[in-house]
Length: 359
Ligand code: PMV
Image (cartoon, rainbow, N blue to C red; front, side, top):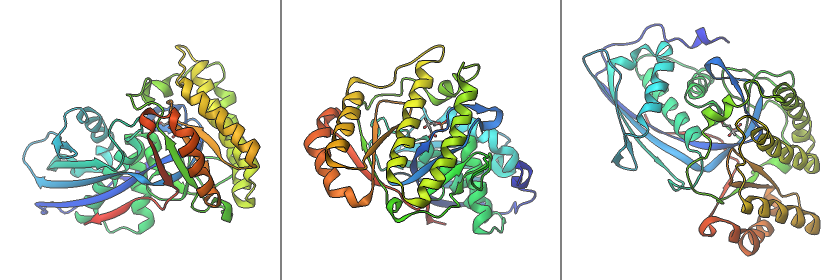
């Protein structure tokens, strides 16, 4: 498929108003996306677990209007919010060529997250995917008659133009984004992982340890740019291809030991890229390192398969098989919670992706 396939060619101009509502979760990458080309095309492939509990719920109300401007209001948790508007304006500008009806309506975007606002959890993946799904439901209402497959692909295609990693939140439990030789894939949208998944990876658990609930120190826009002219960029991009190929085998065989090695190495590589770029950043906090050391010690002592991954920040995602849930919850409560801000953590697990709430 090419981008041209996502252009809406004609639509019913007689629909006056309506409203739709979707929920869409966050996701956590195992092989990381870090570095992009023009039009939000990733420099390397990535794969993530779609989450379940950490999600955005968005209601989109549309009313026919006069005039040629984009017109929308954003409400966050019931209150009018101006801060989100520039990002949504940019999103509308990027997707307009695929959704020519955007200037015909005034949109009220009513959105809330299930996770606390200042938790340091990036809401762009869940937020942008929820909005893309709502817009797809509007498009369908205006006459698009779509198969589930096309609907999901276009929703993911649009979400990508809002925030790259958002394209991996439409479906679950494992989603690949970025052209590669090992899996069915595209640079334009996320695709559910096409390989067999071993029982060990079903309902995989992710507890997010909130080490730093503050604003992100480096926005991902700035972060991705750090990979332009980065001395290790090409090496890193080819490593991501290798790691995805290895992970594919591991996901099928159920080899947890190798899974742990690939996932932790990916997280540390992401941070190594930030430490070796110009300008350079250290996004881990002392407690991030303490937690990593505690995990390594616990794994050694308990012959456990718990491991960590990190996004572009200080929070730690603790990943573990469902079979270890009771033991790891105890480990978190008795040992790891004290390294979290206000002892705050969120239990989550791999899920099936977005859900239509109202059409
Ligand atoms: O979607 P963005 O542009 O916010 O980039 C997210 C990048 C990481 O979260 C660090 C990695 C990933 O693949 O999700």
